[in-house]
Image 1 (tube, one colour):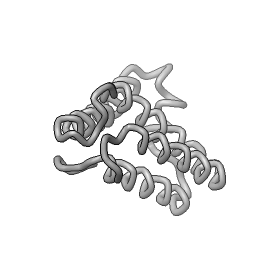
Image 2 (cartoon, helix red, strand yellow; image 1 turned 60 degrees about the vertical axis):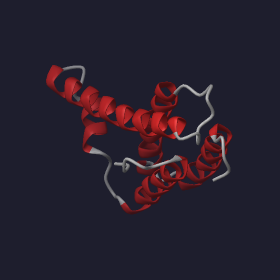
Image 3 (cartoon, rainbow, N blue to C red; image 1 turned 90 degrees about the vertical axis):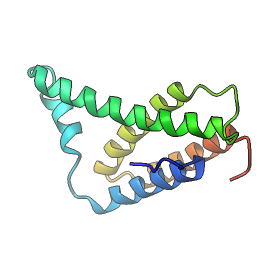
Image 4 (cartoon, helix red, strand yellow; image 1 turned 30 degrees about the vertical axis):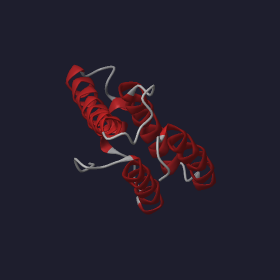
Length: 124
């Protein structure tokens, strides 16, 4: 996902690439489809989806904690909470991409970029 020296700029670039990918993919995410269609009936599907979401959040949390340790992220920011917010955004991006709502994606990403910039202790 993100390399160990990643910072806020790399998180922003990752999200930009993820959004761009939505324009190219004709089909949705297998995991997202599974959680929406099968998780109520299949405990294994639910557990696998939870594992994926946990892995995403853990990865974002680690990057944000490292950013904070390097002085790139404001000290009052809670990395675990921001990471959860980013996982939430990824899932919304996937849904809007599947729906072909590219203008919504672009406008929402502009707000998300602004938010990420407010977290920075340094300009990026």
